[in-house]
Image 1 (cartoon, rainbow, N blue to C red):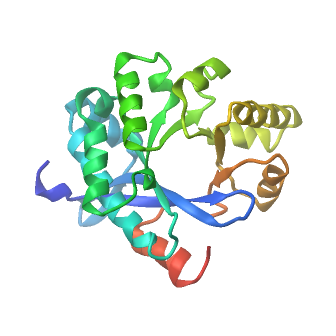
Image 2 (spheres, rainbow, N blue to C red; image 1 turned 90 degrees about the vertical axis):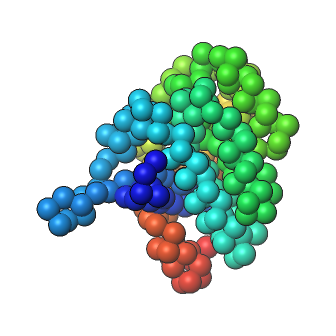
Length: 250
């Protein structure tokens, strides 16, 4: 890519341990902005990420995010030793690049333990269990890279699927969370999903937590990790450090 990734940034959203309320990591999110009429204009990921995937530029852009995330993780681990950063991996990156080598390269550059840089893969892209995924999953296991199944519940979730994919944990889609917090029937289903995932010794992160009462309800059903605006909106590295380190919030 030209101009040294000008316009691209990496934002971070905290991930919280449900039982303690302590921050354990963050999700790295790619952002892009450009100047129009002298003003900085943010472009939605819904618009620019499909373009990157279509052109293949998601591969170098993905490496940029990995390196930025690894650098941030290295810095955060000075304050929170077990801190981890999740990086989203697209289907194109999986099929057309040695993504596991890119992850290892970033890990080695910043002298991180392999489990500290985690790959998030979206459920809807991998439920067909292609040979590409099997190969990648094997490499992750060999190199001790953690794998997280993102947007769990939006594809074709079932016990057989998650057992075969064997993620370190799954992330429940925020749209489902909002419904579960407002409707008794959906909350009962959420409880069963947590039980189902735990029954095969896999942990679960519930996304989209916006209210304190939601947090308390999820503690009661033993969710493992939480993510959402209640704990922090996506922000750049300096803002993240200021919020969770400089002010002593953890």
